Image 1: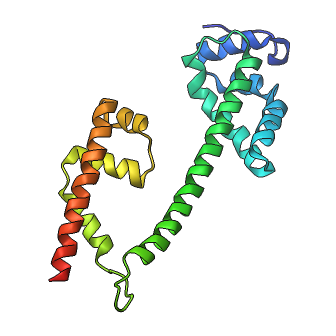
Image 2 (image 1 turned 90 degrees about the horizontal axis):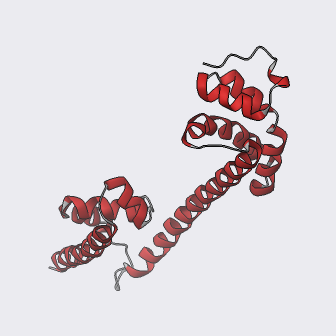
Image 3 (image 1 turned 180 degrees about the horizontal axis):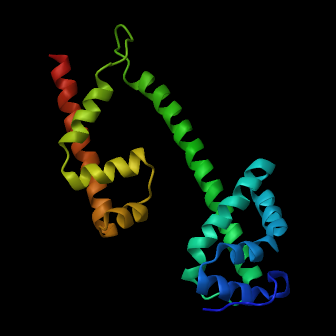
Length: 196
């Protein structure tokens, strides 16, 4: 284990980094990170365009570093940290966009459902639609059900589903395609029952 007799401010980035990796001492990581916090904040502000979100990101990135540093062989901490900051901010923006898209999609689906599923005579919405959809999803084979829920409700991409369920990418696509077809058939059956 490395023990530095010098004060942290007298040590190089590489000395502090190696000492942190060796000891896991968060004070050493804190001393190293504090040298670049103003730069981290600047990068976060540039991408997030919001002071409070940028401050939160500065804290989030520090916590992120605790797990990330041991995974990499870091030659230049400052350059590496810039890339980490940029990627962290892009992921935050992606999350925000995904949340906005989910909300927009929900509102759009509400409007679409009210247009598509109105009864032609009295324009009353089909109150059984959501219940029937849930029943149809419950009837799917387990793999199809998981893939459909992750794809449409969690808005995961094929690769994320493949990674999460440990299923080959081609299988994921197949489960979603077959699941959609089975849902359509099931929903049509319920629609016919309602007509009777």
